[in-house]
Length: 302
Ligand code: CAA
Ligand code: NAD
Image 1 (spheres, rainbow, N blue to C red):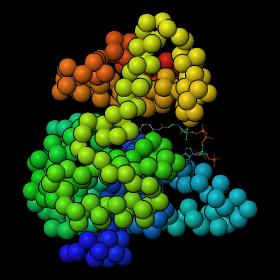
Image 2: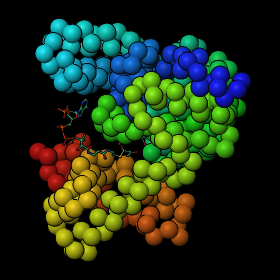
Image 3: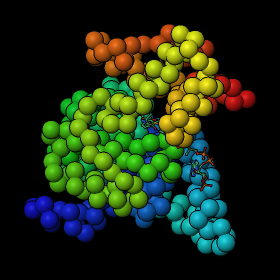
């Protein structure tokens, strides 16, 4: 297949049926933006109870979009919500749904062994054309793909929270990802309305490799008592034009997530001081003060 052929409308149409595994914070957003752009989406979760919660959160997020986009035309807004939801189905049986899937995108827990188990369970049964992708924040795509035979059809698709709002998608190419797979994913990124950048399979890709050390440095400032959380945040918002300051952002991302990213990178690259673990972050995690999602982190949201 020539380059021209694979970037044509044929490649664009190549991904029509999308399976999103994991309907949590990220998976629900990914399913939403895929369905909004006309793709058929199936969300796979561990049980029906979580799927009901996923459905509800997508519905609420779509209503938020509709309120904005169809401000003057509420009926069209209602149609938009119901039509988008009609393209989303749910399942607890991954092996069933992969049969008709062009793309299986995983957004489950950030744990290599669990991600391995998932991809291993479908590699032999998914159609040969099916592309596998991971939304991991910090793990190596090549290491996740190592349990699969289809390494040429494996890539990273890294989204940002909140998915319906953040415009970027990082498309991560391992040395084994084929050009055809990469081009299909770049075309899909465009089709779902995201701006895609190309990343190598390096820790944190581009955004997290910069954002995680930024948040860590801000927390080190707090540990040294250099400035208050509020002043650090005001500084980066008004002095550097960031939408959120780094302490606010750490509360937004979740301290369990940032802490596990830092610890994972520190274990792998102990010589890099930017990845040194943070005792105050560990303390917040131990106290279950994970940020916005638990109502308290560096700030209180109660
Ligand atoms: N669904 C639909 N729409 C949503 C939404 C959602 N879940 N969340 C927010 N919005 C919309 C709102 O409706 C609003 O729209 P209008 O402005 O058109 O009315 C718009 O987004 C802005 O929202 P708010 O007014 O509530 O709040 P805000 O202006 O303070 O913006 C923010 C919120 C978009 C989150 C902004 O503060 C921001 O960009 N923060 C930085 C977020 C960031 O850096 N994310 C990346 C984190 S790192 C990551 O995700 C990677 C990883 O691997 C950990
Ligand atoms: P989350 O905890 O909100 O959601 C994970 C979901 O996966 C849960 O609902 C859980 O029930 C489900 N799940 C777990 N194992 C499963 C399995 N075997 N099959 C089906 N469902 C399963 O987590 P999240 O914040 O959405 O993160 C998901 C992934 O996205 C992680 O790899 C994370 O690193 C990455 N990520 C997170 C963010 C963020 O800001 N939170 C941003 C980008 C990428």
